[in-house]
Amino acid sequence: MTTPRTIRMHENDNVAIVVNAGGLPAGTVFPDGLTLTTRVPEGHKVALCDIAQGAPIVRYDVTIGHALQPIACGTWVEESLVGMPAARALDDLPKPVRGRAPLPPLEGYTFEGFRNPDGSVGTRNILAISETVQCVSGVVAFAVERIKQELLPNYPHVDDVVAIEHTYGCGVAIDAPGAEIPIRTLRNIATNPNFGGRVMLVSLGCEKLQPARMFPQGSIQIQNGQQPDTVCLQDAAHVGFGDMIASIMRTAETHLAALNLRRRETVPAAELVVGVQCGGSDAFSGVTANPAVGFASDLLVRAGAAVMFSEVTEVRDGIAQLTARAADDDVAQAMIREMAWYDEYLRRGGVDRSANTTPGNKKGGLANITEKAMGSIIKSGTAPIAGVLAPGDKLRQKGLIYAATPASDFICGTLQLAAGMNMHVFTTGRGTPYGLAAVPVVKVATRDDLARRWHDLMDINAGRIATGDATIADVGWELFHFLLDVASGRKKTWAEHWRLHNALTLFNPAPVT
Ligand code: CA
Image (cartoon, rainbow, N blue to C red):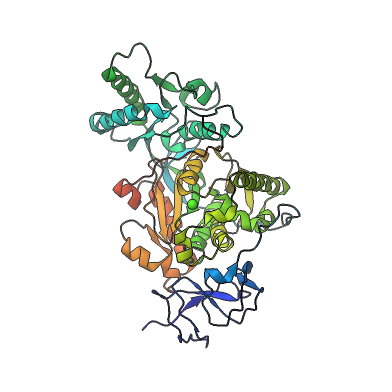
């Protein structure tokens, strides 16, 4: 029989979570004498003392809610007993803490990457075919199949051919405020470091998102300073479908030949641009996987790399912690600006941040978005927040960055791709087979049980932290080394192994027509 175990995140907390697989029955006595008065499911909270009606329920040293009725010591603190606190107003937030010593540098770590003309570094050598509009997607998909079968085998140093398919480009209010977000997202994805600084574009001809609008002169820095290499399907020279496919394949081959000349070289770990996010979260996310990612994030920042954390609705409740961690007032103000924009966006839709949580989150033990947010923010580690990025913008600095994106897994990943990430870290408790075609996605399981059942989908098992078999630092270092190995092409993620990837999903807050 395994010893009953709880994890308490902070000494001021009046709840802890039960970590035993399958939960624990009423009458269970813990080594410290705590006795359960009710059953408590795995990952759910137990009251560590009597909590009066209206009193704060504290986890992560933060009030995650108020007791809607008296809760006796040893009782399951289920969702229906927890009243959600109001969102923190965006005025009078804490100022950035001054005079903090920076994290000590971490030197000597490198990986093997593909250096690009603009100075960025790819972790894969991929031919990307961008599209102005959804109308061309079927044709491009057909061409990509043939390119993979007939051309790619002749270019062994090219890893893959990827169509940047999306549903934008026409039937949209392209001049509306907010439309610049999907447009700049597409522009910046085209120059992701994994695409070798070459931009190939397929356009229809009559679409709203014309090539010149997608890539205004001088808007991107690509090979030899040229404009994107564009194939227009409505071009008069194309007689029949076969001509279109031949055009795309001919253009693709010139790019494959150029990409094939590239070789990996040793570069400092500082060239990593890591996007972190979580999906399918449970109460263990904030106890095991996300703290381990936070530890790895600190290592990466210390090594000079860039780390992006995102997901507005999952950090909104922690805004007071985040402004205190901002490197300066400008960064704090930028963070508040992004949160305010999102508050208004949700208000227009008739919802608030509480729309974030899923049935799976709640089944996994997260009572509300406040509790989920505290577990989510831990992914960002302890480094000062060096900068803020608006949705779809390209990242141009190192350090820990708050990249404002929706929490939706596919949209967050798409926007981090546009920001220029070359490695992606994804934590999950409930389990998701998420992957991206353009960037390796390292998946970190929050629970032993998930890592065991999904042994050929999860790359790192942070559940060992809950069972006491590893520390947060152990898993953090393991993740750091794994990132360097995968970035170098020495190892593959499971998602790459199975070629699992999700559709890119643009964030378009503007109307469609
Ligand atoms: Ca997410």
